[in-house]
Image 1 (tube, rainbow, N blue to C red):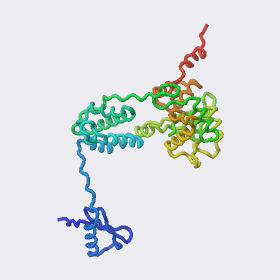
Image 2 (image 1 turned 180 degrees about the horizontal axis):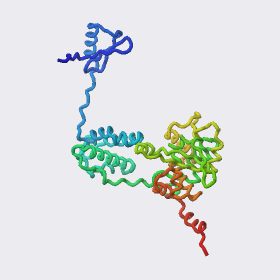
Image 3 (image 1 turned 45 degrees about the horizontal axis):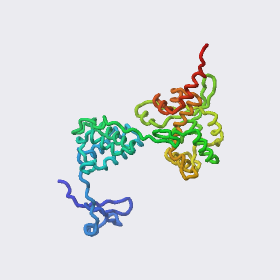
Image 4 (image 1 turned 180 degrees about the vertical axis):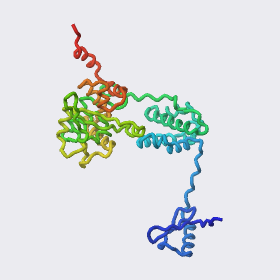
Length: 387
């Protein structure tokens, strides 16, 4: 026969005090001694039961057949914890929680309470089309439901026999138009005039000029660029000619490749004369190229990106508009790929080596805006017809 329940717990700390907790009450009573008497405990019990604040009732256990229960189980699964990195976990969790808080158009109930086996393709289309003005958000919802039901099928969740989001098409990205009337999607590509005006406006700030030159002539992501420094400089022997290059590992996808046991991807960027002039002005003891105002390397890509936005928004036209408001660091990466093609006639595989890409599709995507007329006309100059 076990000991009877007293209805309270007496816990001692490492000092000369102990605390009384009473079941059902949130408050606790502190004694200035480690061994209170029976009378002191009785008085404390009477005080808490008379004046104490009752504990909040515990929430009822979630039903096991709704989207909330499946989502909570997905958060604890291998697909979520092991197969994706922390940044993707956070982004996917934000999408999931925002979706589960929305209300259904018919019954006006939270979608977290929808039975997992009642969700159909028609419902997924309605969930997607609620974000027609923000197609990226609608597509993120569809992708999350694909992952969620994929997990449910693998886990043999009761009632789940198919993935209703698998055949739902994603929304097309919003087509934007530059002030010159050129349509584009995604990040707007910088033009040479933008770079020249940006550098001219910040000509007295060497850190700004260094950052923009590195972004343009290396094409590196800011997640990589914030860590690049002298340790990454190397001399590569190309057919008897020494070429000064930057060689660094690509951050994006590194965790996934490590989990899969694959070798890491490296980008090898030749240091062109325009960039060499800027790098040679750096102090000899600066091991990492980019430093913030306190003389230390940037701690995250986000902080570096926010600083570039401040530099960008400092440029204001006479009418009060900001001509660089829709330009970003990734737009400079696009401009860099275009610059390498125009200046050095890089082939697809050469671009893959410089930018750290693994497929030709990525190279073709980034160079979609190259000058087709210039490339076509250059054929007869490089390869004149034989008599």
